[in-house]
Length: 237
Image 1 (cartoon, one colour):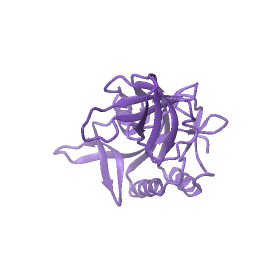
Image 2: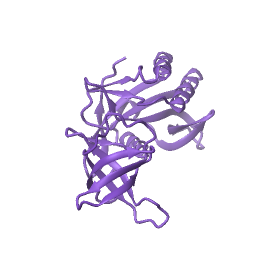
Image 3: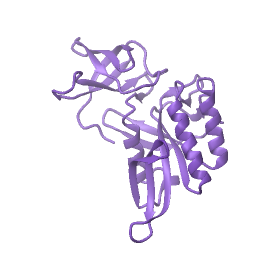
Image 4: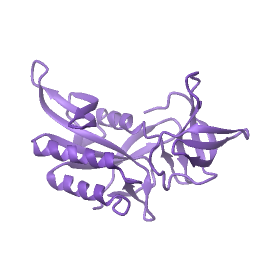
């Protein structure tokens, strides 16, 4: 997934009210950028870290800048949570996620039960009737621990819990389902549920795995031009 326009460098001063960040541009100007991230963004920023912003010259937008990437000195970190689904879909279509290859069709945002699952993969069996399908939920992972293990979630997520419950229901009905964690930083070496932050989510993830939901974690390659899935990371349960 390539960024549409060249990103603008700066350094972050503070993040507040969940969706706002004050950034100092290279010319010394201080602007407020929109931050598309509802999580805590733990381990994703500290005052003075380099960042990259996108600029949107849209008269309907109150804030012209959006925070896309932060840098801890080791790696760029994607903090824009609107991007992982695009990254995941491209990775699946390009055959990077080998576990999810072999499907003819890919469709985003499919309603399942009381939730929406991010991706539906399917094949046809004449007349457009779905013969095989796989539902894939995608999560953006940016939190790491002191041992460089990637963790999810970074705050309690009742929405994420509902998604796991839906995937479990799908598998019990005989439908394939997968949970795909997009590790959006390059300094992580494994993936695990964040049990101390959201024990209920960790419990449901363990149940999902035991019921047959496939758990996949793929790390991204990130630079100022774009982001792409790179390779699978080991799971640490």
